[in-house]
Image (cartoon, rainbow, N blue to C red; front, side, top):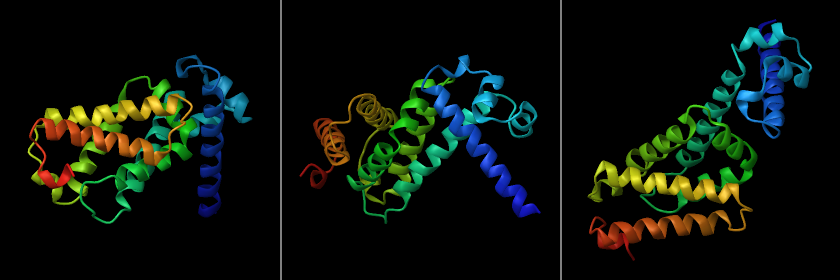
Length: 193
């Protein structure tokens, strides 16, 4: 019985999330009511309230899942030092999931999604990319500036036609970062080659 309940719970939540995504293509999160979401999902309100307190709870769960999957893409890479591969892997995932990233970046009520994305990328590049990052002599402000610039480029990319490939965008971001750090004399010479 527990297995069926877990499966039923997962399917119900998936149905609600998919319905929310469908509605977010038409309107902003604050315009979507529980009744409207339940009608779209063909579920009753009591089923909704069994799992969520309000529509934003579903959005927050979608955000957490998307952030976790994005970070998993980068963490699957063996420690290879600071380079283009982790960013490339993330950009491939973003491209495959363009709709959800667009919706989350454009419907974020609290500003948490971009901030969490920034923190996740910052933490990854600082602590997961290997010892090479410790050789780079930069302040926290410089590091956050670079990562937030990366996120801005990614957001512009997904909001546009995505004409550039993940390889082109990762090369562009990497080259800009290396250029800035080299200009500021914060990057060892071997990274600027």
